[in-house]
Image 1: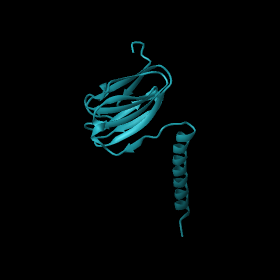
Image 2: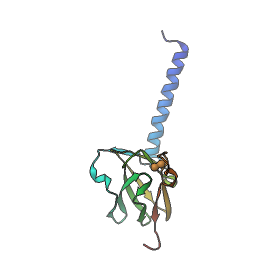
Image 3: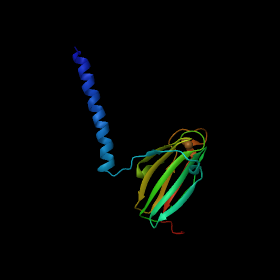
Image 4: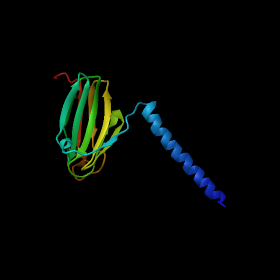
Amino acid sequence: MIDKFEKRVFAGTAIIIMLFIFSLLYARSARKIDLPECLPYNKAYETPKVTRLDSNLYQVYAIAQMWQFQPAEIYIPVGSTVDFYLTSKDVVHGFNIYEKNIHMMAVYGGVNKTTVKFDKPGVYKITCHEYCGIGHQNMQAEVIVNHPAK
Ligand code: CUA
C-alpha cells in the first residue's frame, strides 16, 4: 500500500522528467538547436585548426587551455555553418557563444561537438563560462563573420 503523499511525489517526478524530455525534443526539432554530442577521443583533436569543407561549411578543432582558446580568431563568410570539435589540454573549461545559445564543456581526454550557423555578419565572442583558475575572466576567442579585411 503506497502512501498518498508518496504517490504525489511519484506523479510530480514523472511530470518533471516528461517536461525535461519534451524540452530536449522541442529544442531539437522546433527550435533547430543542435544538441552537443560526445565523440570518441583521438589525438588529432589536440591540434587547433580551421578547415573549409565547402563554400559555407567549416570544421573547427577548438582547444581550451589555461587561459586561452585556440584558434583565437576564426574568420568565416556570412551564412557559414561551423562544426566545432572541442577539447581541453588541462582542466575543465566552458565554451559559450552567447548570441548563439551555445554552452559546451571542454574536458581533457574528451571531445564535444556542436554545429552553429552564422547567418548575420559580426563578431561573436566565445567565452569560458566555467571557473578554471586565476586567468578565467580573460579566456576568450572570436568568430569573425564577414570581416572586411578578409
Ligand atoms: Cu577556462 Cu574559465
